[in-house]
Amino acid sequence: MKPSVKSVLTLSLLVAHAAIVPSAFAASATGNWIWITAGRTNNNVPHKENVLSLKAVGATLTGKISAPGTNGVPVDTAIADGKVDGDNISFAVVRQNGTNSFTTLYTATVTPEKLVGKITSGRGERARTRDWEAKNNGDRSEAAAVAPPKPGYNEQGYKIVNETKFKDLPIAEVEKYLADHPDTVILDLRPPANYAAGHLKGAVSLDVTDDDHYKEALKPLDKKKRYLVHSVTGHYRTVRALEYFETNGFEHAAAIEGGYQAWVAAGKTVVQ
Image (cartoon, rainbow, N blue to C red; front, top):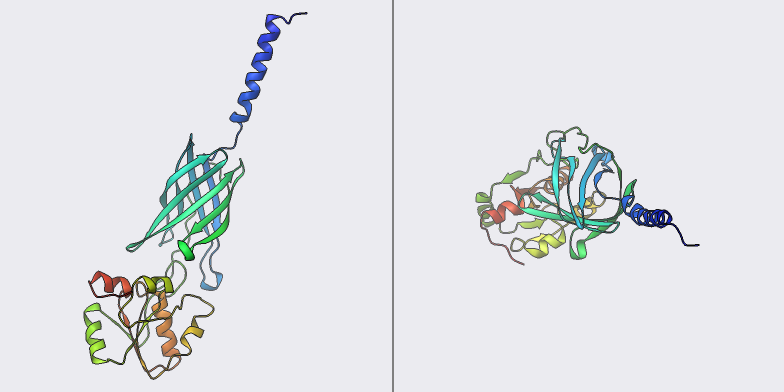
């Protein structure tokens, strides 16, 4: 028996519907996604929300991340180079810190409930990759505000104001200080990779970034010698070294006001 015209049409519609359904219900990156960045409880830094708002159109992905800024109020940062490949997405976020820019790469597989993937920050040997999971956040596209840092501290909870007896020397006074005290030891407190890229002539690299071990790095120093210290911008690494010097009876020390960035901005000589 030949199938009726009605039966053929019905079967054709069912086949077409079956082909459409998987596409219609496939996971889409479009929407708002949230994850929490844990604060440093020992530094009284609160946990912070990150809300990622995405729009996927074909293979193109656009959007922004809302997260608390330096004053605790949420700010938006646009994503870049966003791509969609089936259920997989990737994009970059570029942030500025003074004159430096830092790129973070995000990759994830999309489900209706969450994004699961990796976050990679840094480059080359200093690149760090960690797991990442962001949950569907419904209609909310803005992160919650947090309390601003205490005066004299940055958003990571590190003290950035020098309140020791040791002076911050303006760039204009640094060269005279070194000429008057030729025995001065210049301590570059930035990460070793920064030091390798360029440093003051004669400077010694001493990384004091690690919260748990920076005192071990400073302990071998001779308390009777004279030190001139600097970090990237003269903030928390410089302050923690000066506080250590004062607490442990060092006799002579000073800091470069504004750190390495101020030195370079003033057109002063650096070497590699």
